[in-house]
Image (cartoon, rainbow, N blue to C red; front, side, top):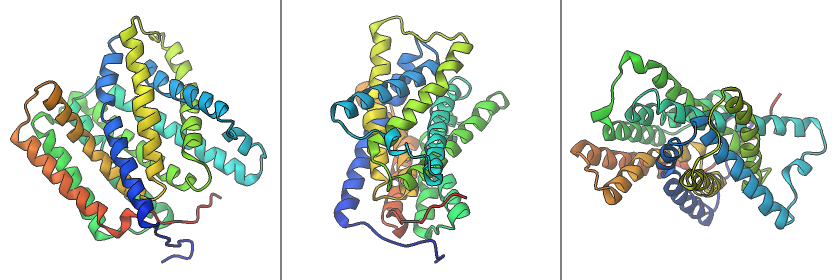
Length: 319
């Protein structure tokens, strides 16, 4: 093992807490596609993501002010070389999560939901490869097999609707780009967990992301104000359910679970969304859908039971 790696597995109680956070995060995040679709009936996809990030930062900012917690910016007020590195990492994380959310929304208008589901959920492979490339972090065979099986299961779920038509190529490539952006986001957040609490990380990344998106929406002369209370309710729900609850719990799970495991667990999203449509909207599920669910669960079991599922503390330095 390289000198800059120190394996320090967390306690069993911490692992259990991480898994609970991850489960509830997946339940919260899986509702995003429905809420985004409702929101886009009145405003653009850029404006939808802007409100998702801005309202999250606003609520967390007010909450931290009421709780009189030390704000993140005051923690970084001393512009030392180390703090500048951390600011750079937080900014990079904000860019990545904003890019991922925006591209995913745009891709739904350019290609099929099936293509977005498969290609946009390749982040476990990119996360594993990125950790190995940057810090030579090893990934055991059980985790790698579990990732591949889970991705295969996700593909089986949407196999009936998947296609590689030439007119969908831009959306397909963008979906892969969103998977890469989310993989980088997870890698960065995993490294920052030892320095800041969850609410500070989510507050900063969402606040900065909303600053990036607002001028884009204004310059494109997009509709950015919902016309009805239904539109406002959808963007508020996106912020509260998917971002404040979902993303906060997702970030919290990285305290004890590896970013590889968190990434592969997100492949449960299409399962949860499909089951929700089956229960609430009586949408039928084909045999390939059910088979894909079983395959994803098998891959996730292998990933969870592998040594790489636990977070390994790596020394993180930026030159």
